[in-house]
Image (cartoon, rainbow, N blue to C red; front, side, top):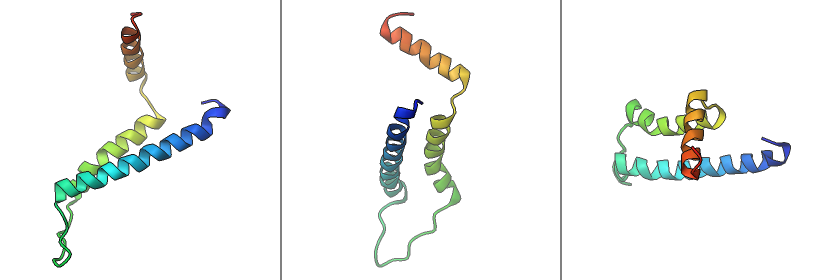
Amino acid sequence: MNGNHILLGIVMLAALILVFCGVLNKIAGLLLGPGDGGQARETISAWSVAAMSLPLVMLLLFTFWLPDSLRQLMEQAAAIIRGSP
């Protein structure tokens, strides 16, 4: 990133994390069911948390590091879409 775009990158990353957390909250409600105010909540298994956290971890991983083979594949796909294979 250029020095001029660092602030924009930080803002975009924060927005992505905020949106992802909102979606993750809704998915948790769908997977775990609505909470009843009068009843004790069930314990959440580690597998459920891991399944919901995996997309966030992958997003953060690929935000900071992208394997060369995947980057080249994405560049080739973009070139095909642009019409210049």
